[in-house]
Length: 292
Image: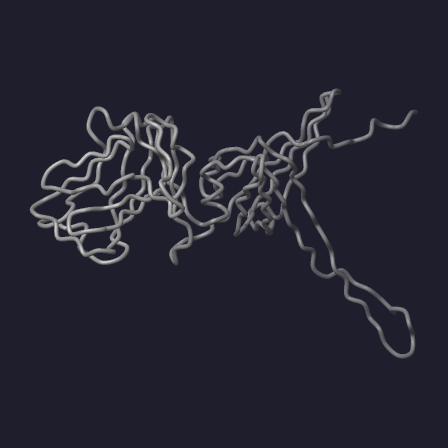
């Protein structure tokens, strides 16, 4: 009788976290660099007297941990590892401008003597919207300058450029009067009311989202954020002989996820989570190897 075929694990194909309440998948990870399970045990030794060696040793704790390294950022990762489910949006042909926030002072956004709203110019504005964060600074009682925090989208629609090292994008101050005040090059309308009475130096910030096929937004760090327990199915790459390995980790818990930005490289993130004992399954994970 010959030896049996060796049981071998090769590569990683997919990791699918799922809800421990419903069993439904959150989604799946396929842009994976690695997925590994680490089970490290401790022992308690009996040392006594003059003996330099232990008289006895017994098993103690076993720490079970799963590590995932990936290069994709589906929304569910933010929920599982950063504690907040993002808001996802489908195709948006119109683009949008966020509600302006008064950063310094209160004179710029004013329903009677200031800017009532900041919006996309109807019909023509969407083509020139440039995604990013902007700051408006009052330079006179009725004039503003506009600053863009990033130039990554400046070539979208009408080209624009920075005018100085402070990141101002308008060559001359924008005068605000009652009614529509359009800055066509960035697709934005400032709607004035009454006679503006800005206090010089007051500022307002807002964000622009250009037309998109999809988008996602989330604010991380709230005191109410919570990190749910989840299950996870880890699947190896299928070998040439058809062998597949599947692991079902019943109860996982993780917190924290780095977001990497590197020069000329795809972002890569690695997260670690604990694999905990599941009383219903009477175990931590199930290992299944299937050979063709």
